[in-house]
Image (cartoon, rainbow, N blue to C red; front, side):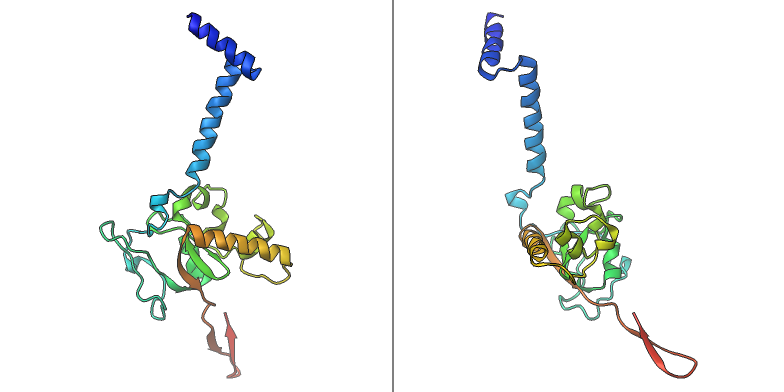
Length: 201
């Protein structure tokens, strides 16, 4: 008991805090440390390829012009990266985290990254969930969460905003696996009553 009292006195003398305040702050520091460490990829998982357990027939992705080869969906016994290849923005929206059998994807400057390892941020309810399944270059450059900024339009951005976007892209290239790239929606031609053709996207 004397040792305990002596230790409590030393804490008060050394820190200027009551023992209760000292141990509360120490506990909070441990919680913050563990939370921050959980935000980053462990070294052994850094280059671990993402996998999903869905069949190719469950997707709506056109893989006929896939520059990465066939769409690879793997079971847990054969862990290879999922390469989507050429994907339109509409097709990308299916990878917003709402389907637990699909990876969570996000695009920056037309490049698609698998952000499934950061599900706590990009998954449903996460602080960046609105970017999942979307091209988010403009929003990242402007540091904006406005829905109208979540797109790939870089027009009107100044040099400092483009530099911010480049920093984001560098972080994504370092942390996440690149699985494809965005392509424009296919153009359809339709006949009008006059026989002329017009294009719509």
